[in-house]
Each structure stands twice: as structure tokens, then as C-alpha cells.
Image (tube, rainbow, N blue to C red):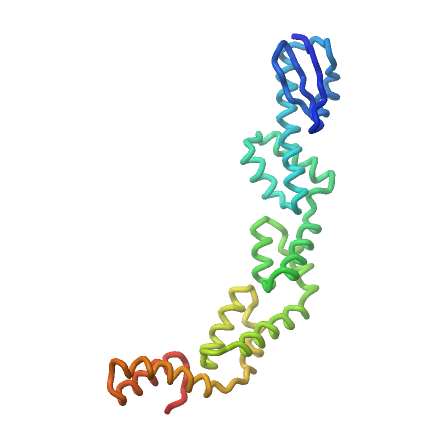
Length: 245
């Protein structure tokens, strides 16, 4: 077989014509096999060229994948599986990426935590669990999370104060329960916020009056006055209000 033509495309790849068949090859393949016009190659070399080109194509896609944002080794492996890359080439690509500094656990963990702090209200437990899913060392994760202990306290106070300030419908009891669940879901442990919740000062009498009137106005359409009052108070009691009219 003879190479009849080699042309550099605008995308940086080469269009190589071998016995009237065109192949799009990466520069690394051209250099590795010293390909040039009129060169004679055999089937074995052609197979090796195609195999190596598949590797470089996968590597090129992974570099573009990484350039969008930092990736974990698990994410790289999953992406390579989607690209149907052989296990041998996967291992090779991951080793190359590690040697080139593209895969660095500490850099990724630090960047991930900074993003969560700057772009979300998530707490340390949720952040840690998300990182553990990517097989990072818990010790490495905690080394960075421990640097933000003061921040967690301030963030918890901010969340609590905001929820208290905008509360329009909940009794103190139900509001505390709601904030407790929200903080747990965000990744804060009870030990971090229990004292702050216990220190909430709120007079829910005005909320009681408003909610009572709303319920009463609705119930009076179906029941007599006494029953409407009783049912309204019962519903408010279930919602955590202890005041009686």
C-alpha cells in the first residue's frame, strides 16, 4: 500500500490518502510513523496507525472535556466508557493525564469546595459526601473543610435569620422544625445549629391571628360559628400554635 496524498486540514488534523482510501489522522500519528507522500506501508502498520489514531482521538476529546472544568478520575473513566475506549487505552490516558497534572486530587477538592461555598448554601456534610462519591480520601477532604469552620457558623446564622424574618405562616414550633430539616438537607449537623435554633425569639401571636381568621372565614361557610371556631383552633394547634382565642 502506498500513501498517495497527505493534506493538513483546518482543524489541525491530516487527511491521508492510502490506496484511494482517506483517513483523518492526528499529528502525533503522522510523526510517530513518519508518514509522508509516496511512502509504502503494509497492513500491520496500517492497523497500528488506526489503533493509535483511535487513542489520540479519545485523548483529544478528554482534554476538551477537562478544559470545560476540572474532572475527577471517575468522571474521566465514565466519559471514556461512553466513548467505547478500550480499558488499555483508558489506563494509558489516565496515566498521561496524571503525569501532566490534569488529574490532581487536592486541586480538585479545593476547587470543588470553593465553588460550593461561593455558589451554594451547602454545608460540610453534604460537600464531603459528594466528594466521597468520587473516591477521594476523607482525610484530604476534611483537611480543606476544616479551614471553613467559622464560615459554617456564620452561614447557619444567616439562614436562620432569613427564615425567621420572612416567616408569614408558621408557628415558632413549625418554623424551627422547618429550619431544622432545611439545615440537615443542606449538610449541617444538629450539633452545629441546635443552640441557634433554641435561641430563636419569635412572637407568633400575630401569625396566629391571621391564620385563625383565614381558617375561620373558610370554615364558617360550612359550619356554624362555634364549630368553625373550634375547628380553626384545632387546625392551628396541629400546626404548632398554642394560643387560644
